[in-house]
Length: 232
Image (cartoon, rainbow, N blue to C red; front, top):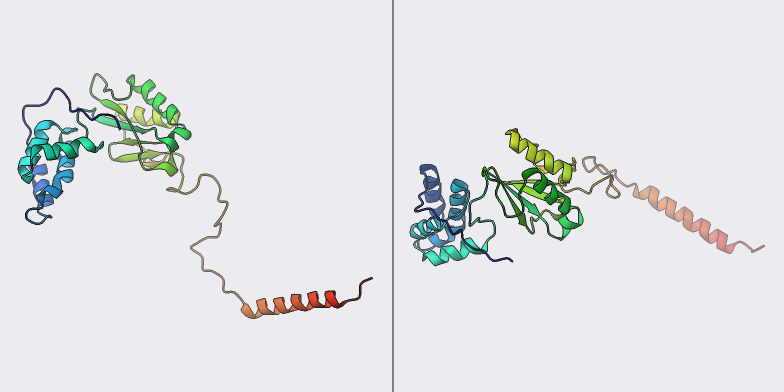
């Protein structure tokens, strides 16, 4: 894993807004006394949802709330790549380039992002509207390649479909439903079924054991008669 370094330019302070503060209180209340540190990941997530990233002052504020040493909060924030240690764009696009996605064409997906946004991996557009990040593994290997826009996964993407998603974001339009961009049924195999072709919603026909036994006995008798018949 590459080094995780906090941004050089940090805000002077951090405070949860009223909504996030209330949510933080409810989260901390779930844990028994003396175990508040267990809420560190959810609170870091709240800070990131409010600010778009996790700053050092945010980590320090969370440390106070949870009665933790600030370095302990920083250890958690810097080890998990889902926490952004520097500002990102309003639309943060993550492209998985791990093995499954690479084999299925993630290079074309990265190229589409670069062509549409004019930035490279790890960069932010000048207007702060977009940022682009390379990740691995997104955990959606069966639907590779995959990109994430915020909390939503767009699967089975290629150069063209990735460009359409970015164009919609630029125009402020509603994005297509997240999931497969090829119409695949969740994580079902692509293409026509090659096995398990029966309709699972229909009742299974009852087997006629009497008829099956009669057929077996008939075949057995025919085989015996054939074996006993004189050879020509």
